Amino acid sequence: MLDISFIRTNPELVKTGMLNKGEKDASAVDAVIAKDEEWRALVTELDQLRAESNAKAKQIGQLMGQGKKEEAQALIRETGDSKDKIKELEDTISKVSEERDNLLYSIPNVPDASVPVGKTDEENVIHKTWGEPAGQEWRLPHWDIASEKKWIDFERGSKVTGAGFPFYVDKMARLQRALINWFLNEAVEYGYTELQAPYFVNEDSARGTGQIPDKEDMMYTIPRDGFFTIPTAEVPVTNFHRDEIFAQDDLPVYYTAYTPCWRREAGSYGKEVRGLNRLHQFDKVELVKIVHPDESNQELETLREYAESLLEKLKLPYRTLLMCTGDMGFTQTKKYDLEVWSPGQQRWLEVSSCSNFGSYQARRMQLRFRNDKGKTEILHTLNGSGLALPRIVASILETYQTEAGDIRVPNVLQSFMGTEII
RNA sequence: GGAGAGGUGCCAGAGUGGUCGAAUGGGCUCGCCUGGAAAGCGAGUGUACCGUGAAAGCGGUACCGAGGGUUCGAAUCCCUCCCUCUCCGCCA
Image 1 (tube, rainbow, N blue to C red):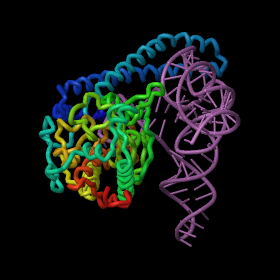
Image 2 (image 1 turned 180 degrees about the vertical axis):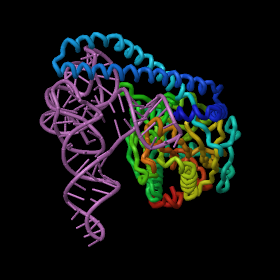
Image 3 (image 1 turned 90 degrees about the horizontal axis):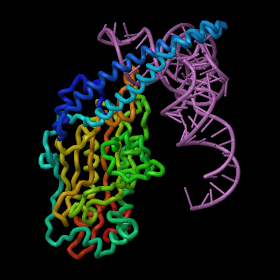
Image 4 (image 1 turned 60 degrees about the vertical axis):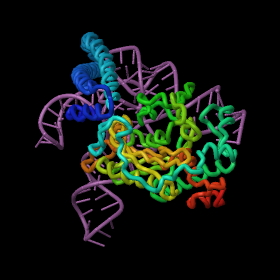
């Protein structure tokens, strides 16, 4: 969520950002300011009442201590009214603050000034392209390669679990393992601390990173225990330090974690979900940064460059898009998508999304540091994939296939695969 | 899963209805002492919110695992939940 005092002092900026992000109207901004004013007035009133009642209780205590029972009794009789009033005010306040918070949750993060204004993905800006996208020619889409080689078993996955839960068989299982290892090794070498995270999170964590209330339907739930299966490692990893206060010297903090990711992906269909394009369960190595507010924009650039370097080392042609305001998502201030070329499908596939969340997530999580003046201040969080596996696997199969039907193994993966060709 | 014991500030740990935001010790910060350091001595050391102020600050409220309740008054009593530890069971 945004800082309410920031909204109060910059209402027009927030409204513009909201409309640019494609919200229908920005009335929530004025509404939240009004609701907050109401809340503050009530809190002031309640605090005064409580102060009076505390003073009385203290006095009663003193009288009792001195054995002046009669006087104490008289005072106790006086307290009835204010007690009811306090109770009533407390109920009103909890209602009002809930309304205020709901409004606050409905206001998206303000896009950074450097983000292009636009409505749809057509207005995203191509920030960079790398490599020569190969033509179709004799190249097959990865699902044909995989089924011919019996490397990915979608049918048995459907039988055992459901659509979107494939088995990876033999060389494909090994390729996945190779990628996970290589991604983690690269990240650790770069300076990320490796974490192994829980695959289920509780409601507080889902709220901390903004899956609740915004994107609740993307997650699978375990209702009996109140858990959500993680849609990305971002959720447990960013929540790792929830409610903590960092010393300034400990910043920045970099984490990497491999986890499976589960997404319900309700409403997806057709070529979008063909093969490995979109799955309900997939593997991903995630990168998370927790940084000083002044550094987050620069940190986003280095995060993107790091993710790009992985594709370059894999020698997979890609392009980087700077997402426009309308296509970038609710909680981000700025976002880059990395798309790898799929020669078998002749289309780009998103394999990494690098985002700066500013203070939006950190405020929900009360993730803070102590600044030069010794005051606590909200940190900034970022994350990006480094990288998501299935589409990388798809792109490798399609890019590295030979006309004879074999698959060459990218150089950086050969030591993990134990071979140069599969 | 069963039985029991617990969850207090940065840490350890006292506190079983009133003057407790919380003893004491350790840590940390600053000052004194020293050629410098250690030791010693002195002072300080939570978070959030509301009000006020340009700010430093000042006044107030809340927080002793979380949420409810009893009471004029709750860290302390009651209820629910979560977590930790010990023993038993189960188990990779």
